[in-house]
Length: 415
Image (cartoon, rainbow, N blue to C red):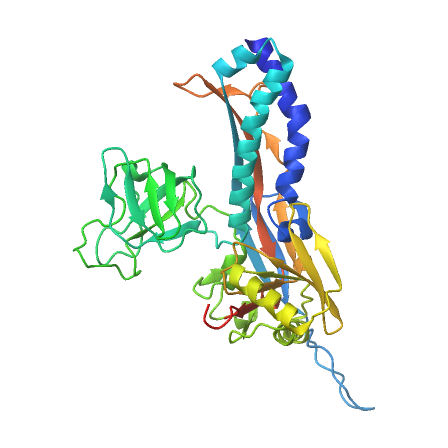
């Protein structure tokens, strides 16, 4: 058996690891494809972010004092690395049955690897646009319990997928502001989603929404609880949501309220998204924040509204850009600057987020398999299943978050 596993591991490391590492580093989003990568060297990521201009310039006259010094001001950004994993499992039975046929072994392994990769791609793409807390959606109804499953209504299903394992947090009382995670609500698997009515079914009979609340009561948070990916609450990437969400109090250790320069520029499209709106946003970012917006990511309704605007006004597209992950963007001219417009499913549906991709970096270790004594596949305790874990550690950081742009109310009126 050890010889068979050695062959499987060799296939995994030689055939799949290079491709998986490359795909995970580029495919999840055009945004991820365009930003810089930096090797992680310390668990705490730090950078010095410049604030405004150097203050030492001034005009003068002969015999008059030269300008007073005014060294460039900086803020120290700090951010801890997070753990990222791709889990690949294969049963002992599968290994044995495929051991006499190399092609069968590769096919069996391929289906497991591709399934794990799709999960990693989807979750990493989602996390890039989150705020680090990892909240997928809020619970807005009490649970209907059955003998083997539970159903409940959520506020949003865009970040949920069948098969995902989630932790279901509930508020323990009418005054609670922090969620409580009971053991019975850990790692519940989503088995069905009715997206039309936002009804979710999980494979757990647990009480998952209302706890110690009366029939009509809700908490100060306005909901009964929330869902996260298993074990991921407050452990995800510090994504773009941390920059754009005005309710997030701090960013990279800096208080947003006391430091308005760290907050992105906000423009209200007033349900009339056009090149003029984009130009205004991009010009303000350049003039006041020193930012060159080269990528604008639009939610679904915003992108549909912009496409409608282009058709109605015969907007000339400079070019189309195809990304590795399959997305296609429009290259458009905003004034004298070329900017790529793409549809991004994890941006709020009626918003557009503009970024200067040169200001972002993903500081992370390479994707590598965790090994013990050279072995990649390790038996899972109490099971007949072997597990391989592809790992990376790092986080996302922006050196000029105030130079980002958020355009709201981008959908068409009446939609």
